[in-house]
Length: 212
Length: 350
Image 1 (cartoon, one colour):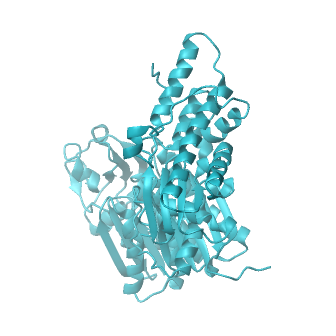
Image 2: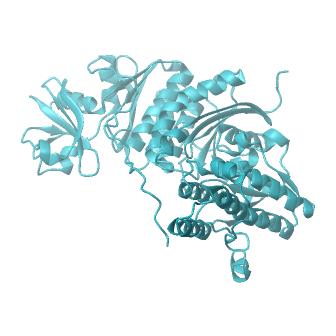
Image 3: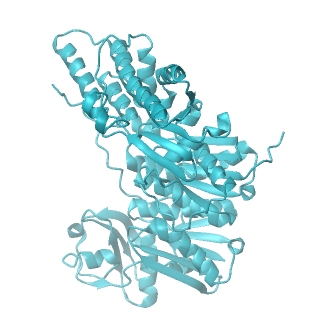
């Protein structure tokens, strides 16, 4: 029984996958409350499926890129749960999950891009072939520098219609797709390490200001 | 001898730059594992929140494992999980809160989201036994300077006063920078002060004069002191004379400790309380300990200060408070427990 979740976008999405099908799934969208929503959602999908924590045999987690604070909620939850339950945890690039969903839903037919909101007027960005295999990225870029008339999947496309006129669904990743991607090994399986892509904002200190 | 008395509680603390995981059984400390990112912050002269948050994520699981190993326990034996839910740096708190929820979920055990300041009070029971209740608690660190009346550490924590500008530890950091001493400033100023004179320079004592005392009897202010030290040092530099670092450090430290201890003793006398408890990183200051004991003894008041390792932020203090919450039958927190960077001191458990 695989428990999958992703907190790298405004969506907090959780799913349980029994090896063949998704047996429970929950998604809530609230960019400011990842820390509050994730654990109750995990408890809720277990309840809904009539399962207990000891039934879990593996974890899957989206490793971003995404806004740092929310991203860390998913990663520390995955690492800690994996440690206490003594089960493996698989990381997947969040943009790969959006790509897989777009291919499966048929919203894209040929090569395409995925863009999610990186805030500060930038997007997290990656390029995919028609099967949803990542060709390039992820990176953090200004929309204007990668503007394209081609199809772009994810919320980043909706935020910057001037740069990305051909926005395609879905807007946010789904843990159900994440679970299937891991089960089918359709994407590169990574360690549960965050893809921050940006260094912390730090200014080297200047000398103390004079007061007299 | 195996300790079997009381609940086995694991506590997690990530409100600033220390990733702390402590394990206690009742009032007995079994493990206090701390991973600090202080060295990563040192060259910036202060804690960088995003750097601290990243370090918490990396340190969390290894620190939990280290604590269990030291305590000689298996995680599934833990009866409850406690975590600092505030106050502190929002992003840093959130890493600890999410980890604690994952532990509680994975173990099927209750979760207690607790107040950082109440934990600083509760930790003393690990060293000196059951807390004196009521007591006046003085919590002084880089982020806090508070006087509290504690009638019950799990339900009755009442603020008497707090800093109206800088925290005491912050003043130590800033003065250390002025004097060319490393971050964090507390231990370095303390060391430099040992060879200096505490009466060499008469630095101001904030909020201790007539009108200020009426409005801010139990409040603190250290911003004016910091500026006074800066002015004094600049005047020296302008006149081309060397700065007597030891004397400045000793006189500054004396000004801080004078105000802190004076107000703590005044609060205890005013409220008819016989015990003062001091916690937080600044409680490790050698002069503060000596002066507090001297002044309290003159009024027949007892002073309790945990050893320095328990005064700075750690997981054991959170476990200590968690253990009291379990022992006194308090209700656990829900899984949607938030991290609250400005959690009021009156909220002991969220």
